[in-house]
Length: 79
Image (tube, rainbow, N blue to C red):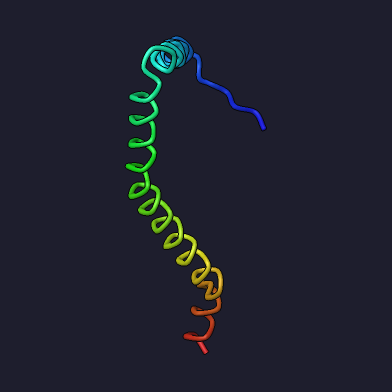
């Protein structure tokens, strides 16, 4: 798996990784506490995103099961 960082994000990501390494070295428990809190705090966002994707997939599945064919509808009305 490849992970590419866009060019404009290289310096900010490098600074964040450096700051994280520094905080893990100087204040490991506090840093791990913050990282853990951010991780747990992301659960509601993940659940909301999953539900949105599931709803979109369901709409696509229903739409694919019942395609609307304008020509067929027009031909039936003409007969």
